[in-house]
Image (tube, rainbow, N blue to C red; front, side):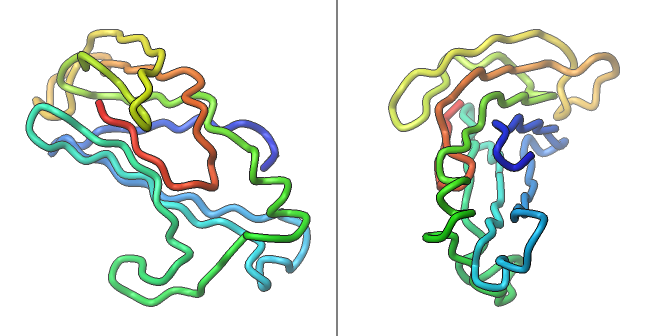
Amino acid sequence: MWRDPFTLIIAVGVDGNAIGKLYLDDGESYDYEQGQSIWREFKLQKSGKKSTLSSHNLSAGLADGKEVVKFSPSSGPWADGIANVEVEHILVLGLDKEPSSIKANGVELQWTWQAGSSATTNSEGTASKLSIKNPKLKIAEDWSITL
């Protein structure tokens, strides 16, 4: 299933931020020992009226302040297979307001908004839903989206 497009679901915390990690390898071999894997961190960080959703490689040194094994899926059959796998949908739950614009690398993205409860106000009910369709971002690359 690692060849399938990904859907990221982000649940906003009471501070307006969120963080999650993804580890992925072929699930069949020991090729991860030669760096044939990815380990990514996804962060939603609120700053004033804007938020930034980003993907960063954790395979390059430090995670939570500790040295980690360095993975580098830069060559080999698994790396070739994962290189074109995209994030096809991003769902952000619990934002406090509808964004006025959503951009990745300066390009406006297609999105829909459904009003609802906000995580920052601890209100009851169905969470607000921001749905970003087909952002054309690679699961194995660093990127950021400005909301």
